[in-house]
Structure formats: structure tokens, C-alpha cells
Length: 221
Ligand SMILES: C[S@@+](CC[C@H](N)C(=O)[O-])C[C@H]1O[C@@H](n2cnc3c(N)ncnc32)[C@H](O)[C@@H]1O
Image (tube, rainbow, N blue to C red; front, side, top):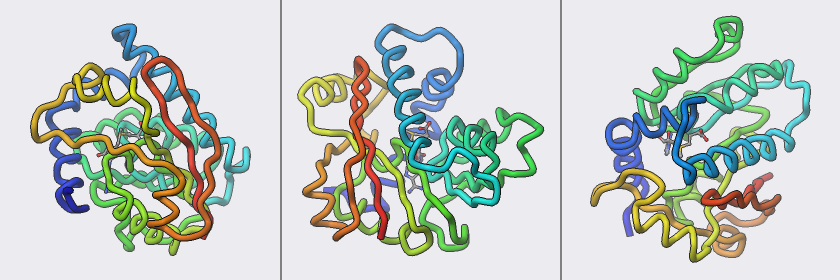
């Protein structure tokens, strides 16, 4: 099973090269296939669910968007008044997130191309990691949560549950372009993650919309 560094390298190559265009399109208003439209809708629901774990008014709060991608969550957090650190291992996606952000929100957001667990990013009131830990094994997620949890009292993240439909779609490469070097999504449940992380984990809810099936979890160390 690949370790953290190997998975992260694969994720970087995937999002920075193989799937940059597909990801840029999915996270925009541009027309997409019916399958990807369900993914887009599911992701909109998940973003709202994750945000509902935080206070509506985030003025004065410092929030990490861990694995910010093209910055959809970053923008929402900044609109609510948060000071946002948006970090992603893919420099190209960070650049897209930077360019997409409404100019009025720019003073609230700092962008970083690099690892979400970098201690130099500082301390946070909350960390949101939407669909950015889905490629890691339970031990790596456990270590990541503990690292993030040592700098924040609340980590809201998603994992892919083990459902046959989701796994079949993923392996058939139907959702996104993939090749042999692409990172593989690893499904998890509360039990295996708790074994790897320790106490403080809770499942919040599942979002299932067409081909987007994902569980929202929260870690409070
Ligand atoms: C499926 S995308 C989700 C992007 C964004 N959170 C969203 O929901 O639109 C996963 C993102 O996590 C990033 N990522 C994965 N592992 C990371 C790590 N260790 N540090 C920083 N970013 C990471 C990837 O580069 C990718 O942009």
C-alpha cells in the first residue's frame, strides 16, 4: 500500500497535469456530462453541509481550506468573513483559485502551494478538507488529522464510503480521467478511521447524489 509521500506525489501529478482541465471545468459553471453534473450537485450539497458545522458569521476566525483545489470553499469562507489560508499541493490549482477569487475578498485570503499539514501555515479556529483526504490510507488520514488537530480544535473532512456503485465507477475511470499513476480512492468507515486516529471522531452525515457519494466527518481532538 502506498505511503503518504507516494500518495501525495500521485495526487499532485494527477491534479497538476492529468486532471487539471477536467477539475477546472467541474468546478465552474461550464456545461458538463450528466454524470459529472450529479457530482457537481453532490459537491455543492457537501460544501453546504461542511460549512453548516461552522458559525454563520466567521469574522475574526482563521480557517484552513486544506486541499483548496480551485477555491470553491475558500470563496464561501471568505464571504462569511473568515481569514482563510488556502493550501493545495497542486500549484496549478492554487493559481486557478487565486485568479478566480473575487478581488474584494483577496485581502482575507493567503494562498500556499504545498502540503496541508505544513506547520508553517500556523494555527486555526477550524480546518476544512473537502474531498482532499480521499486517496489516503487510514493510517495516513489518522496522522494527518492529528497534525491538523494539534493546530485547530475542529477538523471537518470527507471520506468516500465503501459502496459498490462508487467503486465500480471509479475503477472504470468513468468519473475522471485516470491512468496507472493516478491516485486511487480508498473508502473508509468511522471504525477504521477511529482505530487510526483515536477518540474525537464523529460521522456527521452522508451526501449521495448520483455519482457523488461521500461522508462528512468531524474530528475534535
Ligand atoms: C478532489 S480535490 C478537492 C478540491 C477542493 N477541496 C474542492 O472540494 O473543490 C482534492 C484536492 O486535495 C489536494 N491535496 C491532496 N493531498 C494534499 C496534501 N497533502 N496537501 C495539500 N493538498 C492536497 C489535491 O491537490 C486536490 O486539489
